[in-house]
Length: 343
Ligand code: F6P
Image 1 (tube, rainbow, N blue to C red):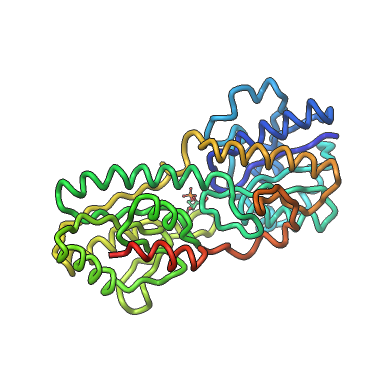
Image 2: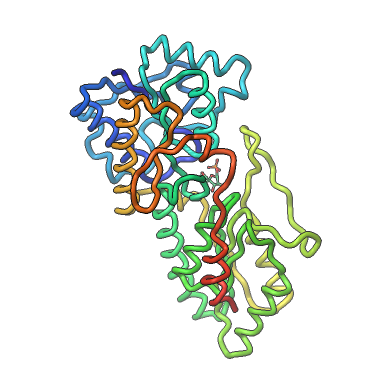
């Protein structure tokens, strides 16, 4: 078979590990010819490709980013885009396609499968907000980076008796904030799923101070928002793909904390540090398992399916079950565990 691969959306550690696994099993086990499309769906629209073989994939396992490049281009948002994708894949002689991405990329894959293309999805996002899989690769690495940062901030916060507000990624879901916050011993965790009450947050921080210690770590997901009408926020500008560019809620929260409590407060926005560099061992293994399962799925003709992790096993689920609805933080984890340590 001639099998195509692409990576779309925001990059994340482990993408190269998936590519390596697909190529290894495809070439050595099935005798496939593998071809990478550059920059996500954009490369399919423009017929920009890269031949992939085992030799080309040497050294890729621990390398962050994606050798194929990535964009957020969505052919369904361009005039005649989806037809062009189908025509170009036919012209390239592609028998099956593996799309590695998050909600947007896999949403395109799902629609193309309905038009008869053998396309299989691999779930990726550091945000871990994709449905139908318990976890996406890249998330564990992001949590590790964020909790390492929180550990470092603790010691400087203690030395200066300060409040440290740390902003982590998480547009629709606060998985990184919740897990890194638990791992790092945060005094407050603000996530998109739970609009926060700044009065209550400040009261709890004051309570810590009254008990004699107020070096506090407040972890804020970039998509967190206050209860309506309780605090002013700025609405973000849009990027080229119509997504609101987030970032900055930590500055607003820090200003409120300082004004309302009088505690000296500093802000750290982790940003793309969370997406760069080498994947953790967990992410390398998950990415490798997904890659092997994806090429198997192509050979089984599993059009419109996504490989997923459920109860520790790699399974196939319809792409339609994964896209269009965010997997939000488990309330038991947030209220039942994280919240126990607030204040
Ligand atoms: O891929 C998901 C994500 O990392 C979000 O957490 C974040 O809001 C967004 O991507 C940032 O996108 P960009 O890299 O385009 O600024």
